[in-house]
Amino acid sequence: MTDRLPVYVNAVGAVSPAGLGAEPLAQWHSPAEKEMALSSSSSCSFSVFRVDRSDPRWNRWTAEPRLRRAGGLAQFLVEAIHQALVGVTAQARSQIGLVAIFNNGSIAHTARFFTGYRSQGRRFASPLLFPETVYNAATSHAAAVFGLGGPTCSLIGDESAWVEGIRMARIWLELGHASTALVAAAEELTPVMLDAFHSAGWLRKVRPFRPTEGAAALLLTTRPEDALFALLGAPTSFPYRNRGELALMASKLACELPPKIPAYPTAEASWLGPLERVLLRRVPSLGSFPYLGEAFSVSAGWHTIRAASLLSEQHPEILLPLWGRMHQLSWLHLRLPG
Image (tube, rainbow, N blue to C red; front, side):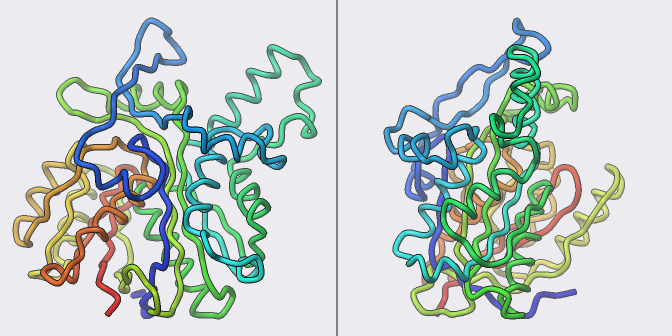
Protein backbone atom coordinates (compact mmCIF):
# COMPACT_ATOMS: atom_id res chain seq x y z
CA MET A 1 0.00 0.00 0.00
CA THR A 2 1.32 3.44 -0.91
CA ASP A 3 0.18 6.40 1.13
CA ARG A 4 -1.76 8.83 -1.04
CA LEU A 5 -2.26 11.89 1.11
CA PRO A 6 0.64 14.30 1.68
CA VAL A 7 0.72 15.67 5.21
CA TYR A 8 2.19 18.91 6.45
CA VAL A 9 4.23 19.49 9.58
CA ASN A 10 3.11 22.68 11.31
CA ALA A 11 5.27 22.39 14.43
CA VAL A 12 7.94 20.18 15.98
CA GLY A 13 9.26 19.39 19.44
CA ALA A 14 12.46 17.75 20.62
CA VAL A 15 14.17 16.61 23.81
CA SER A 16 17.73 15.42 23.34
CA PRO A 17 21.15 15.36 25.00
CA ALA A 18 21.82 18.52 22.96
CA GLY A 19 19.06 20.38 24.85
CA LEU A 20 15.36 21.21 24.72
CA GLY A 21 13.81 22.21 21.41
CA ALA A 22 14.63 21.80 17.74
CA GLU A 23 17.33 24.46 17.66
CA PRO A 24 19.93 22.50 19.69
CA LEU A 25 19.59 19.61 17.21
CA ALA A 26 21.26 21.82 14.57
CA GLN A 27 24.22 22.78 16.75
CA TRP A 28 27.55 21.65 15.36
CA HIS A 29 29.03 20.10 18.46
CA SER A 30 28.42 16.79 20.16
CA PRO A 31 26.97 16.60 23.69
CA ALA A 32 29.14 15.40 26.56
CA GLU A 33 29.22 11.66 27.10
CA LYS A 34 28.20 10.15 30.44
CA GLU A 35 29.09 6.82 32.00
CA MET A 36 26.37 4.30 32.91
CA ALA A 37 26.94 0.97 34.62
CA LEU A 38 25.19 -2.26 33.68
CA SER A 39 22.37 -3.34 35.95
CA SER A 40 24.04 -6.74 36.19
CA SER A 41 27.51 -5.39 37.05
CA SER A 42 28.13 -2.04 38.70
CA SER A 43 31.83 -2.34 37.87
CA CYS A 44 31.19 -2.48 34.10
CA SER A 45 30.16 0.83 32.51
CA PHE A 46 29.78 2.28 29.03
CA SER A 47 29.55 5.73 27.48
CA VAL A 48 26.03 7.02 26.81
CA PHE A 49 24.26 10.31 26.04
CA ARG A 50 21.76 11.56 28.64
CA VAL A 51 19.19 14.36 28.75
CA ASP A 52 20.24 17.17 31.10
CA ARG A 53 17.56 17.17 33.79
CA SER A 54 19.05 20.19 35.61
CA ASP A 55 17.34 22.62 33.21
CA PRO A 56 14.76 24.58 35.28
CA ARG A 57 12.18 24.09 32.54
CA TRP A 58 11.72 20.52 33.80
CA ASN A 59 10.16 21.93 36.99
CA ARG A 60 6.83 22.47 35.21
CA TRP A 61 6.47 18.70 34.72
CA THR A 62 7.65 17.62 38.16
CA ALA A 63 4.96 19.96 39.53
CA GLU A 64 2.25 18.63 37.18
CA PRO A 65 -0.18 16.54 39.33
CA ARG A 66 -0.66 13.91 36.62
CA LEU A 67 3.11 13.41 36.41
CA ARG A 68 4.00 13.52 40.11
CA ARG A 69 5.16 9.89 40.05
CA ALA A 70 5.92 9.60 36.34
CA GLY A 71 9.37 8.67 35.11
CA GLY A 72 11.60 10.22 32.49
CA LEU A 73 9.84 8.55 29.58
CA ALA A 74 6.57 10.37 30.23
CA GLN A 75 8.30 13.67 31.01
CA PHE A 76 10.35 13.53 27.81
CA LEU A 77 7.20 12.79 25.83
CA VAL A 78 5.10 15.60 27.30
CA GLU A 79 7.89 18.15 26.91
CA ALA A 80 8.30 17.40 23.19
CA ILE A 81 4.52 17.52 22.70
CA HIS A 82 4.31 20.76 24.68
CA GLN A 83 6.75 22.38 22.25
CA ALA A 84 4.72 21.19 19.25
CA LEU A 85 1.45 22.51 20.73
CA VAL A 86 2.58 26.06 21.51
CA GLY A 87 -0.20 28.39 20.34
CA VAL A 88 -2.78 25.61 19.86
CA THR A 89 -6.00 26.38 21.75
CA ALA A 90 -7.72 24.02 24.16
CA GLN A 91 -10.65 23.71 21.75
CA ALA A 92 -8.35 22.69 18.90
CA ARG A 93 -6.58 20.18 21.15
CA SER A 94 -9.88 18.40 21.74
CA GLN A 95 -9.76 17.26 18.09
CA ILE A 96 -6.10 16.19 18.02
CA GLY A 97 -5.12 12.52 17.75
CA LEU A 98 -1.91 11.12 19.27
CA VAL A 99 0.35 8.32 18.04
CA ALA A 100 3.08 7.64 20.62
CA ILE A 101 6.00 5.38 19.75
CA PHE A 102 8.36 3.54 22.11
CA ASN A 103 10.82 0.68 22.06
CA ASN A 104 12.69 -0.25 25.22
CA GLY A 105 12.09 2.91 27.23
CA SER A 106 8.97 1.62 28.94
CA ILE A 107 11.03 -1.18 30.51
CA ALA A 108 11.89 1.45 33.11
CA HIS A 109 8.29 1.18 34.39
CA THR A 110 8.74 -2.49 35.22
CA ALA A 111 12.22 -2.04 36.68
CA ARG A 112 11.08 0.77 39.00
CA PHE A 113 7.99 -1.19 40.00
CA PHE A 114 9.89 -4.27 41.14
CA THR A 115 12.63 -2.20 42.77
CA GLY A 116 9.98 -0.42 44.82
CA TYR A 117 8.21 -3.68 45.59
CA ARG A 118 11.41 -5.24 46.92
CA SER A 119 12.40 -2.19 48.94
CA GLN A 120 8.97 -1.08 50.26
CA GLY A 121 6.95 -4.27 50.24
CA ARG A 122 3.53 -5.20 48.92
CA ARG A 123 2.12 -1.75 49.69
CA PHE A 124 4.11 -0.35 46.77
CA ALA A 125 2.23 -2.59 44.31
CA SER A 126 -0.95 -0.54 44.65
CA PRO A 127 -1.85 1.29 41.40
CA LEU A 128 -2.74 4.29 43.60
CA LEU A 129 0.95 4.60 44.44
CA PHE A 130 2.46 3.52 41.15
CA PRO A 131 0.58 4.55 37.99
CA GLU A 132 3.17 3.38 35.44
CA THR A 133 2.82 -0.39 35.23
CA VAL A 134 2.15 -0.70 31.47
CA TYR A 135 4.18 0.33 28.43
CA ASN A 136 1.68 2.92 27.18
CA ALA A 137 1.29 4.80 30.47
CA ALA A 138 3.19 7.76 29.02
CA THR A 139 0.68 7.99 26.17
CA SER A 140 -2.18 8.22 28.66
CA HIS A 141 -0.33 10.87 30.66
CA ALA A 142 0.27 13.01 27.57
CA ALA A 143 -3.32 12.80 26.32
CA ALA A 144 -4.63 13.77 29.76
CA VAL A 145 -2.16 16.61 30.42
CA PHE A 146 -2.91 18.33 27.09
CA GLY A 147 -6.61 17.48 26.82
CA LEU A 148 -6.24 15.61 23.54
CA GLY A 149 -9.67 14.38 22.51
CA GLY A 150 -8.91 12.55 19.27
CA PRO A 151 -7.91 8.89 18.85
CA THR A 152 -4.85 7.72 20.79
CA CYS A 153 -2.54 4.81 20.05
CA SER A 154 0.82 3.45 21.22
CA LEU A 155 3.23 1.67 18.86
CA ILE A 156 6.31 -0.39 19.67
CA GLY A 157 9.16 -0.72 17.19
CA ASP A 158 12.56 0.34 15.94
CA GLU A 159 13.45 3.37 13.79
CA SER A 160 10.94 2.34 11.13
CA ALA A 161 8.07 2.62 13.63
CA TRP A 162 8.40 6.39 13.21
CA VAL A 163 7.18 5.96 9.62
CA GLU A 164 4.39 3.64 10.75
CA GLY A 165 3.25 6.28 13.23
CA ILE A 166 3.14 8.90 10.49
CA ARG A 167 1.27 6.45 8.27
CA MET A 168 -1.34 5.86 10.99
CA ALA A 169 -1.74 9.60 11.58
CA ARG A 170 -2.18 10.12 7.83
CA ILE A 171 -5.01 7.56 7.79
CA TRP A 172 -6.74 9.27 10.72
CA LEU A 173 -6.55 12.60 8.89
CA GLU A 174 -7.71 11.10 5.62
CA LEU A 175 -10.73 9.43 7.23
CA GLY A 176 -11.59 12.50 9.29
CA HIS A 177 -11.02 10.78 12.65
CA ALA A 178 -8.87 13.74 13.72
CA SER A 179 -8.46 17.29 12.44
CA THR A 180 -4.81 17.33 13.46
CA ALA A 181 -2.48 14.56 14.63
CA LEU A 182 0.58 14.36 16.84
CA VAL A 183 3.24 11.76 16.16
CA ALA A 184 5.67 11.54 19.06
CA ALA A 185 8.36 9.11 20.22
CA ALA A 186 10.18 8.81 23.54
CA GLU A 187 12.87 6.66 25.14
CA GLU A 188 14.30 6.60 28.67
CA LEU A 189 17.78 5.10 29.10
CA THR A 190 18.27 2.75 32.06
CA PRO A 191 20.93 0.24 33.19
CA VAL A 192 18.55 -2.59 32.24
CA MET A 193 18.49 -1.32 28.65
CA LEU A 194 22.27 -1.04 28.69
CA ASP A 195 22.44 -4.72 29.64
CA ALA A 196 20.27 -5.53 26.61
CA PHE A 197 22.56 -3.57 24.28
CA HIS A 198 25.58 -5.29 25.81
CA SER A 199 24.03 -8.74 25.37
CA ALA A 200 23.22 -7.92 21.74
CA GLY A 201 26.87 -7.09 21.10
CA TRP A 202 26.18 -3.48 20.15
CA LEU A 203 28.50 -1.88 22.74
CA ARG A 204 31.76 -2.57 20.93
CA LYS A 205 34.93 -0.50 20.98
CA VAL A 206 35.22 -0.77 17.17
CA ARG A 207 32.11 1.35 16.54
CA PRO A 208 30.92 4.64 18.06
CA PHE A 209 27.46 3.33 19.00
CA ARG A 210 26.10 5.26 21.99
CA PRO A 211 22.72 4.56 23.61
CA THR A 212 20.72 7.71 24.26
CA GLU A 213 17.32 9.02 25.38
CA GLY A 214 14.87 11.82 24.70
CA ALA A 215 11.80 12.52 22.59
CA ALA A 216 10.59 13.99 19.31
CA ALA A 217 7.18 15.20 18.12
CA LEU A 218 5.54 16.38 14.90
CA LEU A 219 2.20 18.19 14.58
CA LEU A 220 0.59 17.00 11.33
CA THR A 221 -2.27 18.46 9.26
CA THR A 222 -3.59 18.14 5.71
CA ARG A 223 -3.34 21.91 5.15
CA PRO A 224 -0.22 23.53 3.68
CA GLU A 225 -0.88 26.90 5.32
CA ASP A 226 1.87 27.84 7.80
CA ALA A 227 3.56 24.46 7.32
CA LEU A 228 7.26 24.03 8.03
CA PHE A 229 7.61 21.17 5.55
CA ALA A 230 5.63 18.41 3.85
CA LEU A 231 5.89 14.63 4.16
CA LEU A 232 5.02 12.95 0.90
CA GLY A 233 3.62 9.46 0.59
CA ALA A 234 6.11 6.60 0.91
CA PRO A 235 5.92 2.91 -0.02
CA THR A 236 5.30 0.14 2.44
CA SER A 237 8.18 -0.61 4.81
CA PHE A 238 10.39 -3.65 4.23
CA PRO A 239 10.35 -6.16 7.12
CA TYR A 240 13.15 -8.68 7.65
CA ARG A 241 13.84 -11.64 9.98
CA ASN A 242 17.60 -12.12 9.76
CA ARG A 243 20.82 -10.62 8.40
CA GLY A 244 20.35 -12.32 5.03
CA GLU A 245 16.89 -10.87 4.55
CA LEU A 246 18.15 -7.51 5.78
CA ALA A 247 20.59 -7.17 2.89
CA LEU A 248 17.89 -8.13 0.39
CA MET A 249 15.32 -5.71 1.84
CA ALA A 250 17.92 -2.93 2.00
CA SER A 251 18.61 -3.39 -1.71
CA LYS A 252 14.88 -3.23 -2.46
CA LEU A 253 14.54 -0.06 -0.40
CA ALA A 254 17.47 1.57 -2.21
CA CYS A 255 15.83 0.78 -5.55
CA GLU A 256 12.62 2.52 -4.39
CA LEU A 257 14.37 5.81 -3.59
CA PRO A 258 13.66 8.43 -6.26
CA PRO A 259 16.87 9.23 -8.16
CA LYS A 260 18.66 12.60 -8.09
CA ILE A 261 17.05 13.66 -4.80
CA PRO A 262 19.67 14.08 -2.05
CA ALA A 263 19.52 11.71 0.90
CA TYR A 264 20.25 12.42 4.54
CA PRO A 265 22.31 9.52 5.99
CA THR A 266 21.08 8.16 9.32
CA ALA A 267 23.07 4.98 10.06
CA GLU A 268 26.59 6.39 10.39
CA ALA A 269 27.32 4.91 13.85
CA SER A 270 25.24 1.76 13.46
CA TRP A 271 26.41 -1.62 12.21
CA LEU A 272 24.12 -0.75 9.28
CA GLY A 273 26.37 2.20 8.38
CA PRO A 274 28.54 0.37 5.81
CA LEU A 275 25.40 -1.02 4.15
CA GLU A 276 23.86 2.45 3.97
CA ARG A 277 27.00 3.91 2.37
CA VAL A 278 27.00 1.23 -0.33
CA LEU A 279 23.29 1.51 -1.10
CA LEU A 280 23.21 5.31 -1.23
CA ARG A 281 26.11 5.65 -3.67
CA ARG A 282 23.73 6.35 -6.55
CA VAL A 283 22.02 9.33 -4.89
CA PRO A 284 23.53 12.65 -3.72
CA SER A 285 24.28 12.69 -0.01
CA LEU A 286 23.86 15.56 2.44
CA GLY A 287 26.24 16.01 5.35
CA SER A 288 25.14 14.83 8.75
CA PHE A 289 24.98 16.63 12.08
CA PRO A 290 26.94 15.68 15.24
CA TYR A 291 26.09 12.25 16.58
CA LEU A 292 23.40 12.15 19.28
CA GLY A 293 23.33 8.40 19.88
CA GLU A 294 20.75 5.72 19.16
CA ALA A 295 17.20 5.89 20.53
CA PHE A 296 15.21 4.03 17.84
CA SER A 297 12.12 6.04 16.75
CA VAL A 298 13.30 9.03 18.76
CA SER A 299 16.45 9.11 16.64
CA ALA A 300 14.26 8.86 13.55
CA GLY A 301 12.33 11.89 14.81
CA TRP A 302 15.54 13.85 15.41
CA HIS A 303 16.75 12.93 11.91
CA THR A 304 13.43 14.15 10.46
CA ILE A 305 13.73 17.52 12.19
CA ARG A 306 17.39 17.86 11.25
CA ALA A 307 16.81 16.91 7.62
CA ALA A 308 13.92 19.38 7.39
CA SER A 309 16.25 22.15 8.54
CA LEU A 310 18.34 21.50 5.39
CA LEU A 311 15.45 22.07 3.00
CA SER A 312 16.09 25.11 0.82
CA GLU A 313 15.66 26.42 -2.71
CA GLN A 314 18.79 24.48 -3.58
CA HIS A 315 17.44 21.33 -1.90
CA PRO A 316 13.61 21.55 -1.98
CA GLU A 317 13.31 17.77 -1.46
CA ILE A 318 15.26 15.39 0.77
CA LEU A 319 15.05 11.61 1.21
CA LEU A 320 15.38 10.18 4.71
CA PRO A 321 16.18 6.44 4.84
CA LEU A 322 15.42 4.88 8.22
CA TRP A 323 17.30 1.64 8.79
CA GLY A 324 15.43 -0.18 11.53
CA ARG A 325 17.98 -2.32 13.34
CA MET A 326 15.52 -4.93 14.59
CA HIS A 327 12.34 -5.18 12.53
CA GLN A 328 12.14 -3.40 9.19
CA LEU A 329 13.46 -0.68 6.89
CA SER A 330 11.63 2.40 5.67
CA TRP A 331 12.08 5.97 4.48
CA LEU A 332 10.49 9.41 4.32
CA HIS A 333 10.30 11.98 1.55
CA LEU A 334 10.52 15.57 2.83
CA ARG A 335 9.67 18.61 0.71
CA LEU A 336 9.23 22.33 1.10
CA PRO A 337 5.51 23.09 1.52
CA GLY A 338 5.24 25.43 -1.49
